[in-house]
Length: 426
RNA sequence: GGAGAAGUAUCGAAGUGGUCAUAACGAGCUCGACUCGAAAUCGAGUUGUCCUUAACUGGGCACGUGGGUUCGAAUCCCACCUUCUCCGCCA
Image 1 (tube, rainbow, N blue to C red):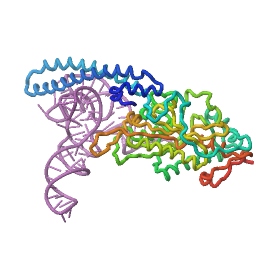
Image 2 (cartoon, rainbow, N blue to C red):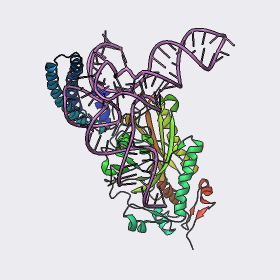
Image 3 (cartoon, rainbow, N blue to C red):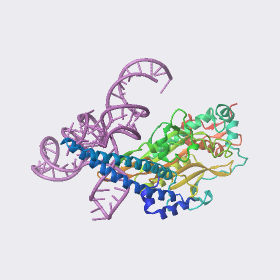
Image 4 (spheres, rainbow, N blue to C red):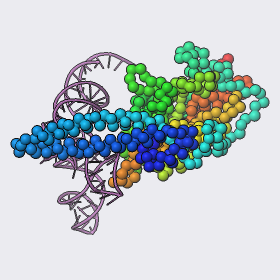
């Protein structure tokens, strides 16, 4: 959420920044309602001041046995006015809040301006793309042939966009989860969290999924709760409505969770394989930091995510997203894209963002720079570290052999009970 | 799922219709005094937020949350949430 005071004082600046995200006129209604709201607020507060003083006067008069009926009558009248004004103010606040909750974050000055991914900028790439002396297969064919991925039976259980992992396929998924967590905990200093996979609507609003993207999520029928679309939601909301001390920052948090996405608008995209699923596994990285450090922390966080791909020797590139391609809550985002031979293209495997104080303001996460100082909003960052299912797909495709077997990357072998290769079972 | 109890500042806790919410009292924390230094002791200070303003200038709001009653609500009424205890059920 943007700062209402900032919009009020610099509407032209905010409007220009929103233009970079291809949004215009989003502030017009807010500015009108805001003026109205402040006017009514002043009125009602004057009346409340009168009521407070007059009520005390009544108390005094009654104590000394005098007649207070005149004052009581005038306060009664004022009370009715207050009630009417309060109702009007409440409905204005509802509308203003609804507007603010649907305005995305402002892009950082270093973000390239553009309407979509065409304007993304390649920052760096790593690793050698492998030359195949045979026609490489797609991961869904490799996985099906090896009987480690079973899309047909997954469809029987749950419909489209689900996968059953079997045998060494399931083992590989689990190995990757543990490997990623261990790297981030032991080498990068993150604290492991195992959060709930269902969270309240307040959490979803805190990180920016609600109210605008409700249709992308799975909601429980019994109560106002949602399956998490990413561990970013519970991790960032851990400190919702809290004031942290400076010593508590920075917080580096990591969690493995399944992620659940309804993906309302994505029918027909990536229909085969494990790339786009209703349920997938991810190891997430979240940082809660002081504002002055957040961009340096974004670079480190992105490097942390890259590290696991380097250890797996998977070629990738890092893209700086354009203003038109960034997510709702982000001020700046790097996508990490892994090389997928069957696509002959890089596919997103991680997205690392600095949300600055956008989520902190929504979730009311603050800290005190010094013991007596006024609380300030923290900056929050998140990044995949990285998507597990897509890592499986990338390993299958990049490590495939001509006979259809898969070499297991060195770094994972100890997590696979020493297995070095996944071969067809007899 | 059933019965009961409780939610007030950093913590414990008092307040049960008005000059006790800038929140009693106790603890913690910060600063100061005493001290060679520390402990003990003594003194002072310790919520957040919104509107307004040149200005903590003036005011509003917040006692779990949301309503209601009243001239006036932490206090009375209703609903909900959370925690605890007991019972039931359960991996």
